[in-house]
Length: 350
Image (cartoon, rainbow, N blue to C red; front, side, top):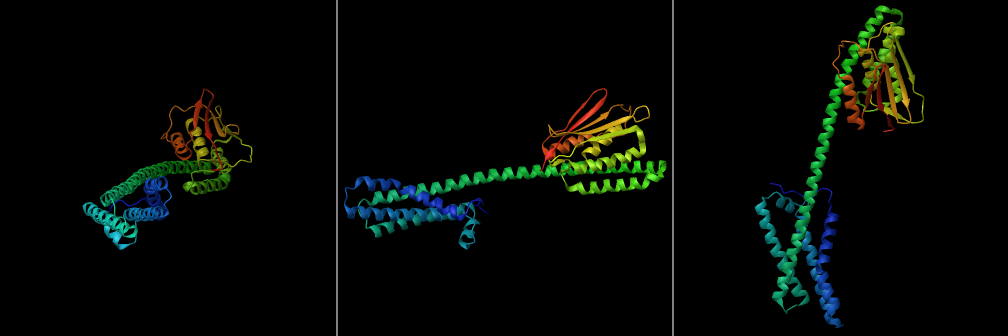
């Protein structure tokens, strides 16, 4: 049965400094007596100073002995003590307390040759060493409470991060097959309707798939990369719908390094195309613009909703979740009779 050891952030240097402070505080009352009670008798002052020195050393060594019992150590005797049961450790501490107190008491008597008021001196030694013992034990008790609190907080943070990681992986796994099925369907239609453009479409699809593989392990990507791939993505749909699909990118280059959650624009483009009717009399307009004032990317599409949509309805929901998990920011949606607007917050140089 291992005892709870001293927290790892407390080193041996901290231990001996703390014990030194405790020993100094313990002799302050006696030091005041020496300063204010003697009338200048040099011999008496020197004798009392020697007595205080012996006490200070004894207090320091006593505190160090009990402090080291709580420290993780390579010394076999301390390791042996730490693996004992709680009852055995208490017994060892009692024996050690009495033995050290008596040893230091007798040492002071021999060194200083103090004979008067021996009972008073003995009692004083006992009480002060007992006070030091409780101070040492109280310090380790407090340190362990802080350690336990920090450990619980760290474990909660690790669990939180693990949960976020699992959620992101689950969301990513939902998005990638969804995109792939749509892209292959677009390519299949394009090959049948316009064989001459098939090679260009294959290159576009290759670039898009390569990009999707690249961003699998990334939480954020450069806005410029996302915009470039989004235009390739729209080119695939353009081959299918022709002039019935109209899109524009009003995203001037800036000196700022804007970042965005991967695949955001692809999801919004796919959502607009999937949920709206695209015919010669009802064109779909998609506009992507940069709001530099509010650090936002705005995607607007015209509205002519389908009555029935073959969709799992996870695109915009997952995008909002990913943004919240990765950046702590949220996307915003708004619509009216003419257009549907999605505002995406940008991240500057993460």
